Image 1 (cartoon, rainbow, N blue to C red):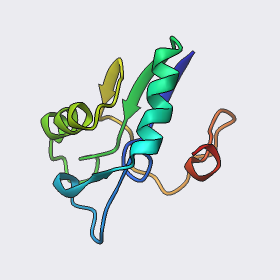
Image 2: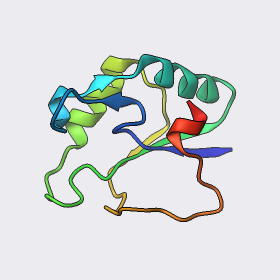
Image 3: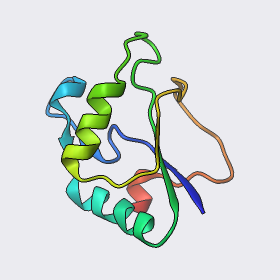
Length: 97
């Protein structure tokens, strides 16, 4: 199975303003995604970091994922910025974790 996982407010959170360098990992969520990886699923972290500002957050994000021990096959920073996603294959973070 190919599983796309958001980053901000899914495997990390913030105390106050969303400043990417200050992201705090949510270890229990990372561990759950790592189990999916270990079960043979393809994990793609997909984020909208930089979608609005056009800042390239690739290096920081890769470094964070490595530091946090997040296992994955691919990192994509091309997720569009949106307010709501309507899709038949979506699982809400609050329901899943």
